[in-house]
Image (tube, rainbow, N blue to C red; front, side):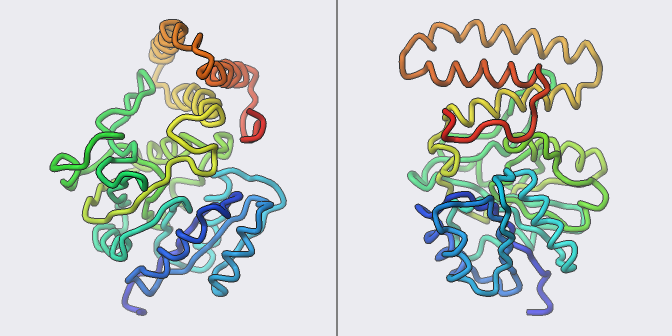
Length: 305
């Protein structure tokens, strides 16, 4: 075991009682023995943190007194791994399950300056891709070439370097946090990994897609469930503007993004007259307003929508 690189499996837990058992069962089946579970619990009220501690007595459970969000939660987990001298951090959502060999395959592909992400499939339909791993258009603030929601097939089973991916599951050399710095906690959740990866790639790190490593994702199980919810729409809208503004190469670039952003909002207005879509419109408008008001970090909870 000592010959294998040491891994800290970091997951942020928030009221996950409905699916945490499947996550823990899946970790039990991993064929990688030199891994240590680090759970950052964001003041869960459903007993899920206690269940994790019961199921895995050797896990490090960091209990927070409030909902710290994904960015700060992952920072706390990464800091614990740094202090323990672990070689890699595996960031992974606890609404996932995994093939037993996925971690070993990621470790085999990663290097001192190379991060690695697996092929992520929908838990409800293993034929479909569930990830935005691919490219990012920094002018328009859009993910590109991600295959999200598309059928798994030859195009999604080839190793390649990426420009962005999700911390839904990513293996990261622990030492890079000392060079790149922590996740920006002003995001709270959504786009914080896009920002972090941009900073890492600018410093010469690489991000490798490893399709032989496979996991399954429930998709936003802790933020209302489904691909898009009002909660997710709010933070994604607010943080997208912040992300592009933070990395804009020039005022002109940011002006082009702003023009595109508002044009897209106006052209989409007709579909929000559908009653089922009105909550998403409200979330978009509120997210935009809060960005311009400078309200970042944790502002709203799932139950607020």
